Amino acid sequence: MGEKLIYMDHAATTYVKPQVVEAMLPFFTEKFGNASSIYTIGRESKKAIEESREKVSDAIGAQAREIFFTGSGTEADNWAIKGVAYANKSKGNHIITTNIEHHAVLHTCQYLENDGFEVTYLPVDENGLVTPQQVADAIKPNTILITIMFANNEIGTIQPIAEIGAIAKEKGIYFHTDAVQAIGNIAINVKDMNIDLMSMSAHKFYGPKGVGALYVRKGVKLVSFIHGGAQERGRRASTENIPAIVGFGKAIELATANLDEYNKKIMALRDRTIDEITKKIPFVKLNGHREKRLPGNVNLSFQFIEGESLLLMLDMKGIAASSGSACTSGSLDPSHVLLAIGLPHEIAHGSLRLTFGDENTDEDVNKLLEVLPVIVERLREMSPLYENVKRGNKNV
Ligand SMILES: *Cc1c(COP(=O)(O)O)cnc(C)c1O
Image (cartoon, rainbow, N blue to C red; front, side, top):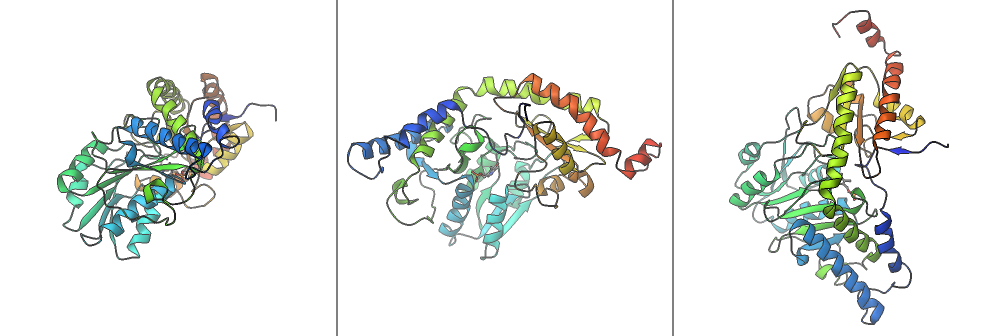
């Protein structure tokens, strides 16, 4: 070992900030009370949850009573989509989404298709964008829900959420957005953007893993799935994970307070990386929209190589990155997102996602720019197709 880990995979997860850990710690030890208990340490736990709820609602322009803590972003997505679908079945059975959603949304929609619901998967353009017009055109008399992610976890493309929200509101259709990648990177006001339901997860913005939240606008009809006690106002039973909820609150507070500064910093790392790599390395393509893009996201396809080999060789140099998303790495299928933006299989296979965060520095990028061209060249030397290209045969 010896070499410092250069972590460039913040879209997969982040470390937990020391201030967040510090806020959480007392709730493991001296303040361990069950929030449903009436004695002092119980009431303290209850108070900590409600303070956290306020931090979340303040961060997104909601009311505290519209925030429900869950066990993850995945759970929030499942709850929002299935919850609206089953609660509004008598009004219709049609759901609109896109074909680049996270699996937490896609697989939930597929599950509902097996249970009598009808789902429209809107295609995206070569930058990964859907247009508000596409959404408007897909609406039918039986449409009950539009679920479109705020920003894509693989290619970083940011959707026109406020415009889609306005259409949904005008048509009286519920609008859910998976904002797991957006929170902590983009200023979000759920009222201004006409968002009815929104999923969040703490471990993408320097909070702990295993805690999420769902914003549910007051008045939205939603069924519950976790039945039991009266926690979360009777809508999501089970003893609250108080340290995690406290961590969520602290993390979202820190993220929103430092948003501009943080974005400026990681955007500079992103732009320098994109500019230099596309300059230094031939046969490379940037995936996702150049401007409507998460501030820390770089996604590149390198022709003539395998993303997995690239990741392993970067790892040997102490650089942690991803190809596709963490969930799809390890399988041989290319990412559904890269295929949806029109990349051929072999190019989708040669993709690399670098997502910058808090602890990344210019030196980290220097190191990446030093090792990546060498690795890419070495891998390409093993490719017969690349040999042809080097011999001047441009018909590849
Ligand atoms: C990470 C992620 C999720 C899942 O959140 P978990 O808390 O890990 O379950 C859902 N959607 C998107 C866009 C994500 O990036």
